[in-house]
Image (tube, rainbow, N blue to C red; front, side, top):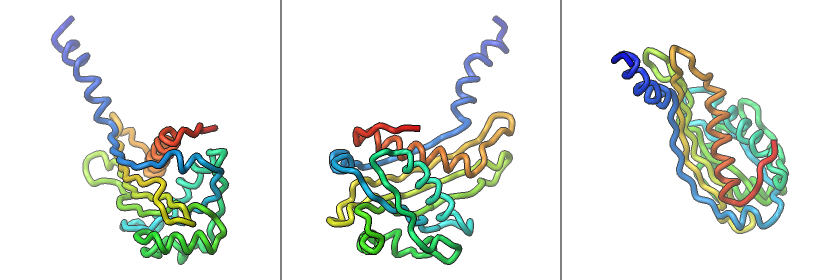
Amino acid sequence: MTTAKTVLVFLMPLLLAACASSFQRDYVLGKEISSKDRHLAVPPLANLTSHPQAGRIVGEILATELYSVPSFRITEPPGQGPAGLDEDLELAMDTAAAQKLGRDLGVDTVVYGSVGEFRYKRGVDQSPAVGLNLRMIDVPTGRVLWAASMSGTSSGLFGQNDSLNELAQRVCAKAVSSMLAQAGLLRTK
């Protein structure tokens, strides 16, 4: 094997591994999540980015992922227009505000949080980056059932990047899949 081929064989896995990265930390009370069918609301996430609708976009993607869970029944919160809940930072930071929303909507679980990054990074390849912080609370008790902080980037080989939306879908899918696995729930597609 020539030197060039040998170098290529050893460098290709490194190049492919550098195409995307993600990081996730989460906390799950699996038995509490799976102990009963959950009726939940997913309001738009608080937007802490410069993208004008990041909270709404990612909140809808997250709700779509949660719709695939048979034991979750989703209620769409009202006011999801441009001047709706995604501008209410209090909801992103305050469990009491999330509990109030849950009581007002008649649900027992609320998933809320914030989008801290939703952009294309500057540079040669303009790679997308997404960062989220999520909480799932039990409305009657205020207990946090799931907390997750996750981020992801994508920088494709030879200029083939994912879109920002594709990356957000992947980050949300990974977060929900991780929560379901730890809670012992099966995902259906």
